[in-house]
Length: 231
Ligand SMILES: *[C@@H]1O[C@H](CO)[C@@H](O)[C@H](O)[C@H]1NC(C)=O
Image 1 (cartoon, helix red, strand yellow):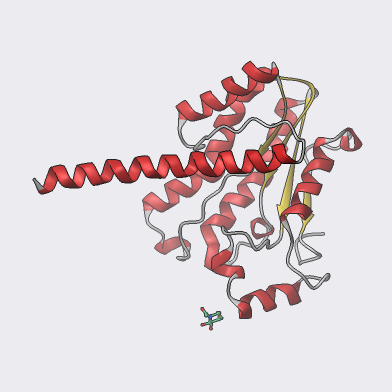
Image 2 (cartoon, rainbow, N blue to C red):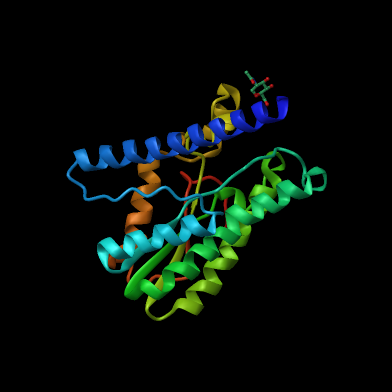
């Protein structure tokens, strides 16, 4: 009896979770539609092969081809040091932050034509992985390498670039930016004395995807208010 009950509540939880994700995607799509933007919202857990396939197929069915891929999905499930991070957590970080981006592009590439563009979202943490998000930082370092390699593999039809955002107070970063002391420390590390916004990041992505960046490929643009990164 206990077993069946556990199983049932597990499924209920699973389905409410699925409905919640669909609801979030629908709400985001509605907000964009209200601004007159044409949008198709598709739920896709990037580590799920079927959902990745569905994302690409649904998009191609509706629009005929793919012009721009922005790979933004990432997880950061641990604040442990690398040598103390469980193997399953190492796998998850690698799987979502690096491998899923590659697999999504494998599906998308056949539909990407001359003049198309890919933007990978890395992190300022990729340059100096911080101890509180060590393995996350290393996966973001990997994206710098991936940008260089994919730019060569996908040339000359497709440009591949990367942005390295600084700290943006989203739900994802709340465990850092939600703490006033830490938030102030980060603001002080920027030259512009503020955290980033999602608009700051979207603008950089829009630039890299546009024809204004038509001679830029294999590059990483740091969008971090002047935080220390690299020369
Ligand atoms: C915020 O971060 C500081 C520095 O790491 C820590 O000492 C403090 O306990 C944190 N505050 C909260 C409310 O978590």
